[in-house]
Length: 366
Image 1 (cartoon, rainbow, N blue to C red):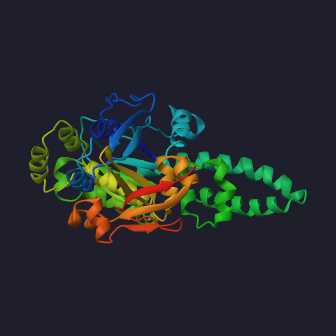
Image 2 (cartoon, rainbow, N blue to C red):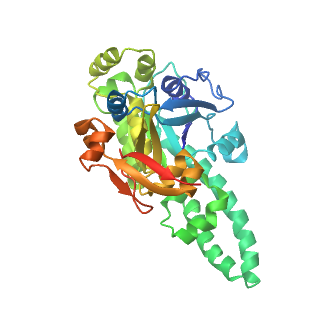
Image 3 (cartoon, rainbow, N blue to C red):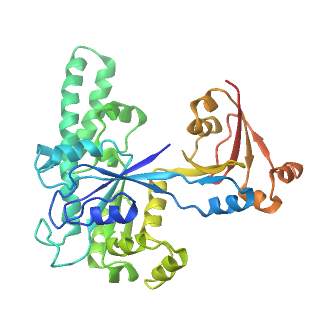
């Protein structure tokens, strides 16, 4: 499965600078709104030290990490829900992503114009939230009107749907995101076809200056953290300026030395990827053989057949069993033969719940 995250934010908050630093694709970056007209997609490999361990043990012909797609979406402005600026384009593109990476400006720089006249991360966050809520409210109202008509005609299912839709309508009218509604599975089903924008999980990226990275933030970051505390959302500190410099470095030792100068042990990209996996409740399992060592992404709690299906649908349809090795055992015994001789290869059936870091081989018959 591929993970697709949409990078959103007001113009001039550092979206495209961050995107350029995170990926090989280069979005145009300029000091004016709407410099990114079409969404740019960057395919980024997910760093995982376990792949390097397996490569050393197996010596495969190739190593394939799993990937994340970051989509740089055109900047949003107030009034987007009514089609202002590039609002309609923005709202259509954001429906296609799994999660939202909301970049908020948390740095002062008189040379970079802010569309609202001053740096205020809480204001910026609320502008985008309001526009998404208004668009969602429009979608809910349309469906609610149809459901109410059916309910009046005696449709029992429609009556339940009306109750569910009204809950989301009330929340949106109160300035809350749809994800804040403690909805039952049936209620979520009632809005599934609407593809509500504010249902999508979100990570806030506080784009800070270089000095604020070393001090774990500034007054702007503190204000943002306090504002989103009730959402239970993560705030990840990133300096797009630092990431841009890291992106130019190829030597791992040079990168490590550069990061250490700021008191960092990892890049903002790594922090953002880890936060994205946690947000969407994702884990990684591996396949390992002489041809390739490869990482695969599944949801935490997925069972073995579903994990097999990520490789190919036939693997899931004809699933027989999964042979599972733990990385620690691979490191101790070095080869599959010795792992089997030691009785450390588990044979699991359809009910096996895949664990993060499992090394798996699937037996199937179609």
